[in-house]
Length: 274
Image 1 (cartoon, helix red, strand yellow):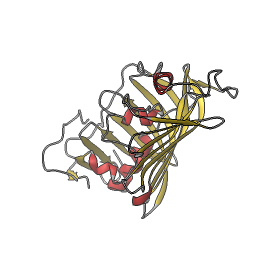
Image 2 (image 1 turned 120 degrees about the horizontal axis):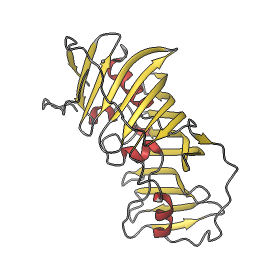
Image 3 (image 1 turned 180 degrees about the vertical axis):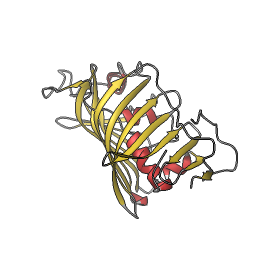
Image 4 (image 1 turned 90 degrees about the vertical axis):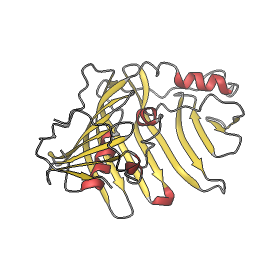
């Protein structure tokens, strides 16, 4: 929920649709875009590594994280589709994302800009261009609209599709003919890993009773500047009826001069994002 404490204020110098908070979600969804094929190249289907299925949990985690810790930001274009209990909408998004702190997205539909969204570690700023209103709130409010882990320190990795199991003891490990399956000691977190790409292709978070709270799926892998990344990301919160699909079309890793300015005129009124 949004608290009355002042959120950290970025440089606000403009926009989003009359869809207000829900448009923001869509915006976020779009912004939450990730990889595409801007500088990507098609791949032939990779084969399983010779050591499969004999890798240890540490080896699996090391393979997943190899080469991804140097990615500190990206820009991308994406097509996003968001479904809530009330509506389903699709948007195009131009996204700028920096690991350290911020996600910016410009949303449009049929070539017409609808708004601009900025997420910081604790706040959301949604400039509704059509209604000329800036909506401000706590970042947790976005979680109720967009089912990605926006308030988690794993947000960047999830949006890029390079999430990995945490370095902790007591993961259980199983395999079938092509995949590894990891689960924690309580069976609350489950990772499915494709060793041909060394990427997580499915993640689930469950309640103590076994109900799926969070589900994330990653597919259509391709190389972007020599890093294997998914072009399609699916985020779900089944109990809340939330589902978002992000399809990346173009992406550049570690671009210089990322800008997160919303370009909001001073006279634009502020409203609570809720």
